[in-house]
Length: 212
Ligand code: GRF
Image (cartoon, rainbow, N blue to C red):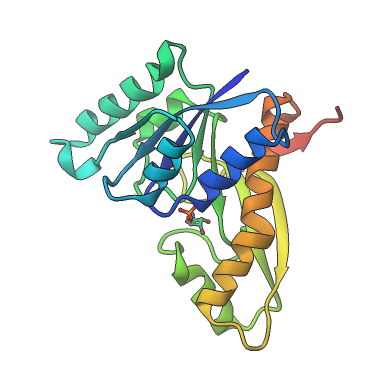
């Protein structure tokens, strides 16, 4: 059983997609043992509590320094139900993870990004900004990417991608909604299922998805 900790900062619709997929059996052999939020007011915390999942709030700003933040996070991740975390899922998590966590969980942290990496990613590309830039550039296809997290910004091995059409009358908000519905909420649970089944291998900063 893959023991997951989900890190959130906001609405938690991606968290909800994972909860639903575990409940309806689309994701097998995985459980969410803990949800860590960077903000006490994140609606994602209510979604977790409603699903009976343990939660905690760890805010970078409330720790004296980065070392203190790293220790607090590592303690929470390691102590998850006494059995530890196998996979960290960043689902709309807005804090940059300290190096020590990335090293300790190498190829065991995944993130969902709302574009087709390597387009519209890297420093400054988060939230609505991504969709604003997509519309500014006039690309006809955008989408979402699930990737492993390394010490760079959106540079880790890509696990899954899904394309979404950009429509003539899209606003950043309508595009964001469609990318979530058509791509993010599908490929994030799918990637977790593949990892839980041991089908994702990493070599040379690339993934290979093995057969069942
Ligand atoms: C999503 O668009 C995700 O791609 C980005 O942050 C947003 C989180 O939304 N990283 P939610 O909190 O899962 O609703």
